Each structure stands twice: as structure tokens, then as C-alpha cells.
Image: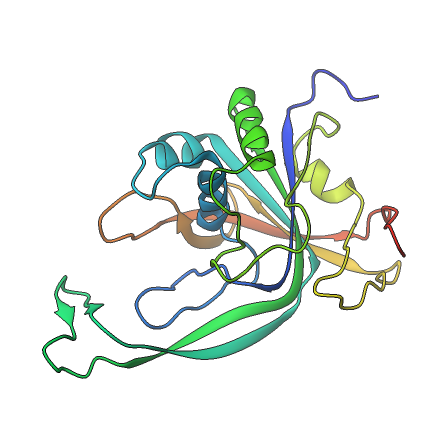
Length: 242
């Protein structure tokens, strides 16, 4: 039975044919990190809550009071696409390129994670904020997408709100693996000796991620520390149709 002394945690599932979680994705070159960025997760919650891009609550509430952990259920493969952009394009100095007959077509390389799946655990020092996010995810103000608007999830993103685990790391280590397949692709279960990579926000971690939300006109981000570790494959949840 869950203990009432355990913290409230919000559990999410990110699965889609394509995902994109940029860490240096500015101007025409759009990369993706190997797992969801905190800024991307915060943006997803802000969409559900109806917070606009410059809403101060994104930083003052969501960034400050939410802590995230991610388990790589299926790493997927890196895919690179090339898109063309034509028209008036903002420059880094604040000016505009294009117009008055000027050729402003550029090629924009874009990376995606193909057929990846992630288990995301969100904790907070404010349980009421997690409840607010949970309710918003069940009835989002704006459509939910996984990093970029073209990356539509193939299963409900929100799983549950729980007090079953003692902390985020405990949930990452023990919550059942459950991948439903994306885009009709393989649903094969991994072998029992499979190890899953986890990334947990930790001020004493030894790795840096440039994805901490900081509201500013240039849309620059601050850094945060994380730790990575591997966990044995948890018990496999029953999958409908498997």
C-alpha cells in the first residue's frame, strides 16, 4: 500500500514516431538531445496550462518548483532532415533578412529521435502544483507535442499522479517498463538483462545540461546539473493487444 509519507509524483510517457529536444537549436540549425530536455518538458506543461511564451509563471513556478527524472525506455535512432525556409527571417542582431527582392532562402538541418520512448517522472516541493499540472494534462489548453509541433505523441502523455515511490529515483528504478510501440512499429519486449539509462536532475551531478528555463528576449537558457545511471529492466507492464 502507498505510504502517505511518500511524495506526490507525476508520471508521463513520451512516445512518438519523431521527437526533438533541442539543446542548441537556435536559428537555422536545430539539433536534438538524446533525451527530453527540462525546458521542453516545462514547455509541454505550459502548453497544457495555457501559459504563453513570456508568461513569468513558466520560470517562477514550473522551472523553480519542478524537478525531473527521465528513463530511456527505448533510445530510438537519430534522424536528420533538411528543410528550406523562405521569406523574412530574423537575424541574430535583431534585424530582418529578406523582402524587397532579396533572396532569403536558407537550408535548415534538423535532427529528430525516431521511434524513441521515455518514461518521465516529475516531482515538486509543491504538491498542489503537480495536481494542477496533472489536471491540465488531462484537458490541455493547447495541443501537446514532443519538442516540436510536428512531433505528435502516439499514446496519452499523462500516466498518473502517484504516492507509490519514495522519490523520483525510486520511481525510475522500479516503475514497470511499458512501451506500446510508435506508428505501428515493433512492440517486442527487451531481454531481461537489458539496462535502461536514466537521467536525474541533481545539483551534485557531474553532467551539465543547457536547458534550464530563463525568460529573456533572446530565448537563451541557463545550465543545470544531472546525474546518469543505469537500472535493470523493471517488471514489464501488461500491454493491450500484445
